[in-house]
Image (cartoon, rainbow, N blue to C red; front, side):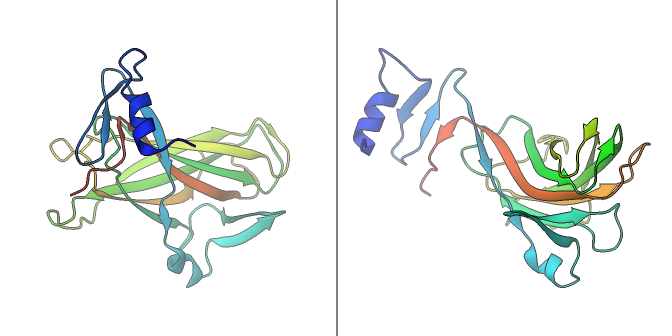
Length: 208
């Protein structure tokens, strides 16, 4: 195992650079040129919101558990929240990806998931009553019962024009299912996991 000083020597090796700049006094390392990587953070799920009405229904399959989504009806949605990390590069779109499975076999059918998202700069913004909607439709192909799927949603970081998402913003989104454009699946889609993926150009977080 290497210590912090050894890690800095590796990262700052000018003979064999790895796209990093100097280690700042704050302890943060900023990548340079085209240096970039990804980081996935799991957002906080509002558990109380699902426990109180008992919706969406919690289901199990072996050691896996998830929330089963019908086409939207009252309370059949999931609410998530995350603080945008300082390691994000601040100039790229953000991806929310969802893992799940179908509880019923389907052949050449479709299902459509949707997120409504919004962001606020804490201490500056008034919490809005608006959001941006991103629907994604998925074709099943020939899908056995419990077939797994990944669904990805792109959050346009500068869609608001002049109020871009920035690090330390509070980013919230609501996940639910809407009707497909046709050939609707039988059964429901079970959400097992939601993650938020950021392009990052920094390692560590600056000490305030």
